[in-house]
Image (cartoon, rainbow, N blue to C red; front, side, top):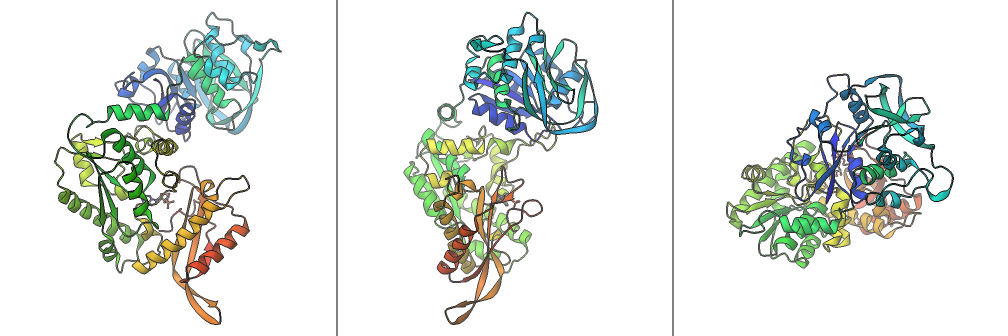
Length: 567
Ligand code: XMP
């Protein structure tokens, strides 16, 4: 399998570069921009051959101390390099060119013209392989196939010359190249007159001032594909089937007798991790532990356990600890106090139940950590902190101890969220679990404002399930189910009651808020613009079905300034 390494200098779109290339069928890894060349990802290993390196964008400037630089030896490896925005400026600066601030920051769509006939060097073939990405006459499939055969000459297809190519690109930069580094030649210029595309005349090094990874850039995906296939010579080797096979064959603990413990939460990640472990190691060796805190969604415990049993789980330990959690939450109204009580009790119950299980010290602990959990993109360079995804986001002594002992298994740590969903489908996990919306660790406790009681949990569980079932049944104008169009939807029980009428009687019922948002990653969120008809019908259905609720409202706040959850 071929691999492209992305050096992350802090751009918000670094993850997107990785996604786009994986979507093209090529495996990617991301490292902090200033990572040492000794890092394992720089090597061809674990069955992945390093074929090229991409230097990402950054909010910093190359001429300041904040602008991080790659390991100097990156330029000595002889591998193809592609600099994007800051990455392009970085290469220019490091290799002897000049970069200076723009009089005015350039942001948004800008026209770019690429003129390929300028090139006359002997190695024009490779440069053309790259520039062909901008040729509107060349379909993506031909660019992908170009890894296996020489790129088409200019004016291919017998028609008019394909260059100059004129297209719209998306820019976001405050600096520009004022002098190319020695050996580079400019092939593309922005309508504002600045260098937009350049290539080295002897080496497989390329630079783009704009962002090919964002959809606003016409031919952006094709430009990335031209680098990956036409320049690096990658072949498509990344697929979920291959990943599943490879990971199953190489799981630590596969050979020995030591059991593997996985704590499952009911969410997509841990369920898929569980299914993968069951497939790779078999039901006898895998111990799955699930804590029913009483703060779960309707039927969550039953659905998850039924699915895992169907997938071969033999040691499924369901811990029923609702009473303990409700007792710990009794009288607590402050959101932070509620979260802390849940986190502390979680660790306590977990330790007690594990002791009861009596697994040997040599056992492994598996976690559903995702690739995005490991990378801190856009939050500053060099923060290599390996985030630990533990149950309910609390620092867990168990996880710390297992990590120190080298007995942690993270079988999803090379996958993005939607790849995990695809893997879940491949492993045969039920559709309802695979497409499930995110759910916070402290569960319904942060959706019942104020004190949490069993009665309120029941009311909220019912109302939430009416809302969610309706979203699954109803279609958007585009024909998708509303549930699949919405990133996260849920109901919130407010600590107020209001007056209403039921028949001839006045009724004093709870107020429920509905929340439905669209988002890419939960960092920011927009309110889902429901057609009024859906909201009105869902509201009526909830008040008719859950009689304790007298009034329904819809939360119309985006994030920021509001958060997605209410507590
Ligand atoms: P906020 O409310 O901060 O939520 O806008 C962003 C996303 O994170 C989820 N969330 C949590 N997830 N443990 C989790 O595992 C938590 O304590 C927690 N709090 C919020 C929230 O549901 C949303 O998807």
